[in-house]
Image (tube, rainbow, N blue to C red; front, side, top):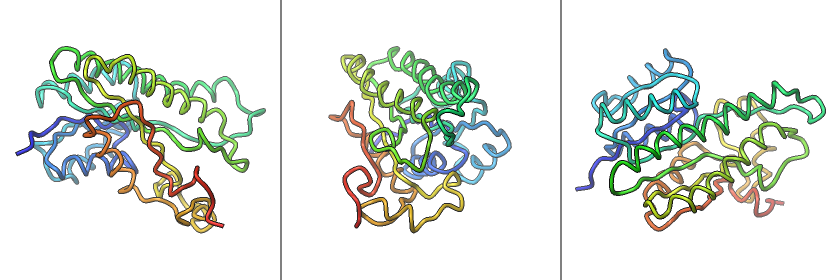
Length: 245
């Protein structure tokens, strides 16, 4: 029988993060949820239907919240085995209109939040034998930008997450810590909203947009893949490989 793992999933009150949390709970793992909206996070925790497997830590992701997530994981479940860095923000704005404040929002919410949460978890990994697994959430737009989606401010922060993935994979391999990333394409989430599904789907070889369960499957694979590190896995229907027509 496989031992239950303890998994921290940031940004798990909706969309991709919520489905990732659902899947880990469903397979018997313990999950520490995180999100900015405490009430929403409480509702999600209740909906998962396994109170003995779930804890919730509200707050904007960063050094303080990262430390709190680790503390709760240790107190409730005895440690941490997997970190999924899903929390983040995204938006479009023409390059020449981006302010310093705009850029700071993305660098803080995406890159710094991921960086310092990971730091807190890695410190915990290093206190025990066995290492751990980190899965970051990036975006295929780092490798294949869209002219009609001016999102340079958001993408430089996400590009930093890709760089952090490969850098930490090298630095932490000797400690048995694996670091990988999932790079979603266009996925049906609240962020997609009422976007043109047909037009967006035509951007990918599989001629459709993705579902959250498909990004979740990739996260589960990388969380467990014992001989995989430093890999950025596109889940994009072939968006960066070609076009349907």
